[in-house]
Length: 196
Image (cartoon, rainbow, N blue to C red):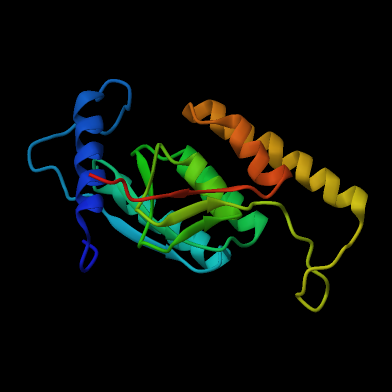
């Protein structure tokens, strides 16, 4: 469990438990057995890179080996490398256990590649005062700084990204139009705390 986890994380875990216990037929390989293991929770913080992709793969593989009812990825990322994000998404998509992305703690974000990862997850949730979006691709020059680069190549990358995020949105029943705008117009949305 995450140290100092708020009630919102407890609510997410309760919703996850209800979803898993209500749909064992729809999600093969996760039917609860006596002595069901705990749900693994992994922190995906910082830049999405090959090390992070390998870490996510290990966490999901371990959850599958334990026949865990799900795995939770606690996300706070500005984004990262396209190739590493795609590796993470492919691993989530072939997971035999549900993958939950939880944008946490308050003030965290799922930016750029984090949008894709949230959209690939079986369940996506956000803590209050978090945000998701601003996923327009950035071309990096040899010095590691953003560059204007080749406009045709950037347009191709953007179109490919839009097609990919729309496909994930349709697969998971999420808002495909907003996802496209997150790329085409670098839009964001935020989760605000509800008043009582």
